[in-house]
Image (cartoon, helix red, strand yellow):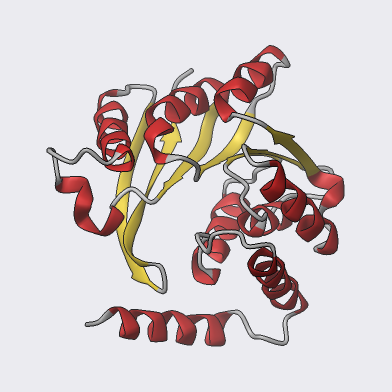
Length: 226
C-alpha cells in the first residue's frame, strides 16, 4: 500500500466516525486553518490520532493532563475536551508565536477555562511544576524528540500511580532502527526506548501507525509505582 492509500483510509475513518457536521470537528478544522495562516509547521496529530488521544484520556478518567509540546493547540483541544468542567490541562510550548496561535485556537474551541499554557523550554517548566506539587493523570509528550528521554523521566516523576503516558513519533518512518544515525531525533528516540525498557516504574509498549502522517508510531504506558 502507498502513503496515498493510507491517507485515503484515514479520510474514510474520519468521515464515518467523526462527521464533518459535528461542531467540534468544525472548530478543529478552524484551528488547523489558523495554524496554516500563521505559518506553523504542519506536524499536528491527525484527526484520527487526536480523537484517539481524546478517548484514551477519557478512558483513564483524567482530571489533570500534562502536554509537552503545544504547537498550535490542535491536540490540546482534543485533550481538553476529554476533561470534566473543573479539569485542567497544563501545556508547555517553547515558541511564543506558536503559543499565541494555540491560545487563540483554544479560546475559540471554548476550552480556555481549562487551560494553563506555559511558554519557554519544557525542561525549565517541568521542575517548576514539581515544586508546585503538580500531579497528572494523563501525559502526552510531543515536542523535540532529542529530549524525549528527559521528558519521560519528568513525566514519571509528575504522574500518579495509574496515570497514562503517551509519546508520539517513536518510529519515524522506520529510521528508529538506524543505530548509526546522527539525527538528534533518532538518537533521542532510541535513547527513549532504552530508558522506557529499563524503567521499572511503568509498563509500556509501542504501536506502529500509518495514515496521513505517513509511517510512524506512538508509545503508551501505565505508571505502576512512584
